[in-house]
Length: 70
Image 1 (tube, rainbow, N blue to C red):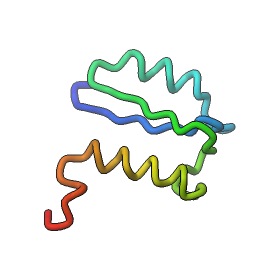
Image 2 (cartoon, one colour):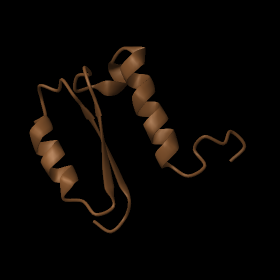
Image 3 (tube, rainbow, N blue to C red):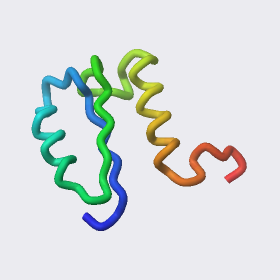
């Protein structure tokens, strides 16, 4: 992968192996991993505390996504 990649994973996921996600993320040159501890597989359907972490990470990662005039 030759483009920046943000992986956001659920720390309490019972569908996807968090170990596998962590192992994959370690191999990326331009990638970073945010593990949201306590959240389950559908992070966008989770409690605000988890969903807000995902949205904040997304906004910080995507250039201009935090600019309402863009």
